[in-house]
Image (cartoon, rainbow, N blue to C red):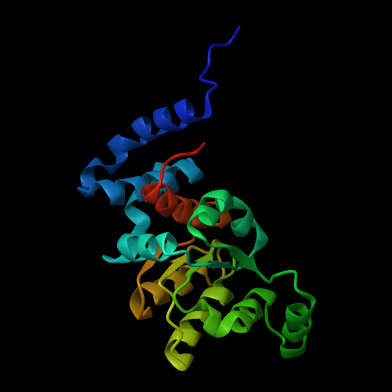
Length: 212
């Protein structure tokens, strides 16, 4: 008979204890440590620790927006699915994703671009004051940067953590260099929808950690 931890919060708490030593060299404050820990917890990889990049205002800006009932706009359904929508709804917010929208798919095909990019273009000014969470498509992140630069769109926070070997590292580097709003990202090819969702959930749990 195997002996193992079964209660979800006990598993999570033990995971955070095991992650903590990997964060010691970075001298993080408590909110930063909680965000770092949740990204590492979602990935199962302490190698994320030196790659995570938080804008100095990212945590405060994200928490303020979420507490105020802002909506979240995502590039793919996997990010939307991973976000704790019950917790978000308790503050008055909703999660939006247009990746499967027929009009978005048609426009993307007509213009020879990705549905994720076209989804962000379609959201447009709705992104003002929101949290944008991108976990899959570098093209979506580039479009958010374009919207900020060319159309003065101003999300409260951009969680830009697309994954992969084509465009992801460059898009995230551009976010860190060019973003006109606070951001959370991960350098290089690592990332993905579970990591982007984990970053959002970290902020939600910093506001209210009751999981009941």
